[in-house]
Length: 515
Image (tube, rainbow, N blue to C red; front, top):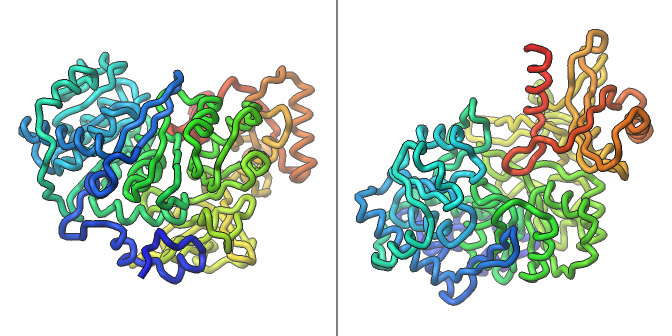
């Protein structure tokens, strides 16, 4: 029987996808499986595993064989140091040879890899170190100043580190099973409120195949790229581990994001499958230079936040298609996808997609009853003990496509009117002079809440521009659905995954009011 990777249609996904069929994509089973083996050692050694676009220009590439050998040396190094299976080994390194060595080598050794975002400062780093208690932390050379206060033993990922690894053997005997812990991941959070680590076992590489096959549409033969940080779920699981598990050459991005550099890399690497954050697409649009590049893109996807319609229309005009969304939560995984490459499921503008095979997803009202088509409620997923809330609002249309309606706490109720921050932002982003927009509700003595928007624009801020934006919103939404307060900003706060962080904006407003 053909493997799941040989099917591309939506209908075949519903017919053939199952847990057993996903396990058939791997060498291991529940009794013995290791992520590093599945991602590296069963693929042609001379095939390029990863290309890295460097923000400063230029690129690096490493084969599956190189990553397999070096990760074996790192695993033997950890064992020689007395670091036992199940103990944590952290890494705070941009995509590079040391990053992939440390990531795969730690899991090969049966240790728990803990990738950390490279923009964490000393407080953010120390909180996570104190929480997971790693036996070792590998730091990028440019982060060496954090070593003294890290709170654990550190190594610097420099030439001396690579030379030291050469003293260790390559072969390493794998002993992990599906239930053994493989990785801790910390979501963004703040230095004052540390999120719990999301814990992944070695069998998680099988589960993530749903997102790979039907969220990003990854198939053998793709030239895949994901510019999101490899410290976060999108860049790591969807952008690195899952394509490597399928033997796919992938590309990542190291350093400060620049949309020009990304577009140059898409051309240089002849990328056919791009999965990025909505912000990445928006920044490419705002650069205004896409016409300089030649693209070979056949499949497009995004996740993390909804994409405004202006950016989606730009992507279709530039790349020939709308990017397809895939949607999920940290707690329950990927729930909805657009099945990139499926000719029998066209991407619908603004839609999150359709449920993943085997997932029962619904829109329920406050009483727990199914909503009618186009009626807004909460997105829920069925679990063994009943419906589980995602804390996101949405609706389903008559064809069964799911649409996002914003986070539950992003709904603004003003003078009895219910408004969506996301919908207001989407409208304002259609204005020619608006580069970025964020909307929140702020207290008002008469209306309870009113809409306040934060606008990033190259145009000079004045009362005339404010009035123009307010009128633009009223004309495109409704008379009451517009920002009564407009504030201009040089930039908007974002999560490490690139999403606009409305919570920070709300917290700033509360602090300004002395709350």
